[in-house]
Length: 311
Figure 1 (cartoon, rainbow, N blue to C red):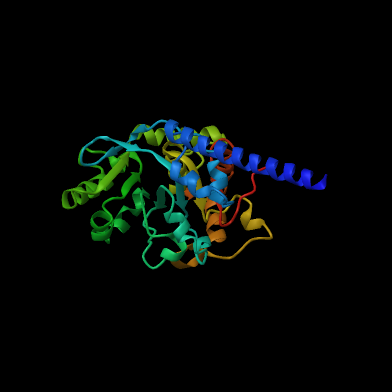
Figure 2: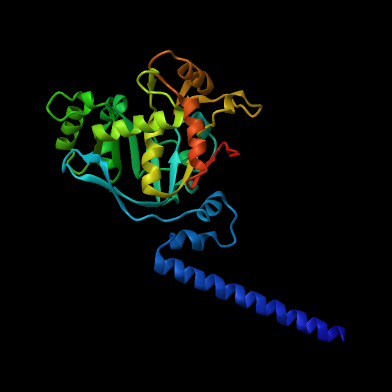
């Protein structure tokens, strides 16, 4: 009798395993045909429990979008960009020693900000760059090493944000003139600038989310703000590395690190408090992080190194 029970149990177990494999195979075929998720990413996730695999289960693929708010300096055409799982790498000193470079480089699109370097930091932040979002104030830093940014790394999309007075195309836009010269010297460089309408939109989002007028409150939006807004349009899933949340600097888990992983000196939390409390001209980093946490509940966004707990 026991022998018969064992045989029945073994047969049922084999049937369940077989059905599971068939179901998984059919799911992969359907996903491949409908293009609802990235096939290679799903395939790599079988049997894995990593953060990217957990994020993939929440991805809802969107159609390719033309981003009219970002115009190519050379061709005057709008940005066309669509990614599966995006890795947004913070400039924070939190990235130092994390050794997630290989993981970051496996993402379909890697986003970086301003002039954050990869050379010499590959082990922690990776070496690939798909999109680099840059503040108008950081453009001179790119131009200090144009051979690297616009020639050696000419496959990278550069998205430059800034106020209309600096980006105007009538010859009076200081930053736009710099970028135009860069494109003349490096014709393969993919440089895009924000439109006046897009800048107003980003200001409007700030007011909607915080209840404060950006100009009247003396606030300057950060590059991270512009990066997240574009990424939510262009990416099907977002993994942000090295960005602290709004309560981190007052938590027991607080870790004293430099403001930038590539620049020793300034303390990250000191900079956050300084900017948040500045009467005028400060980045409201802490306020922005509260908004990012809100966005993460509606979009496929995950924050790690350090991890965010979203209530």
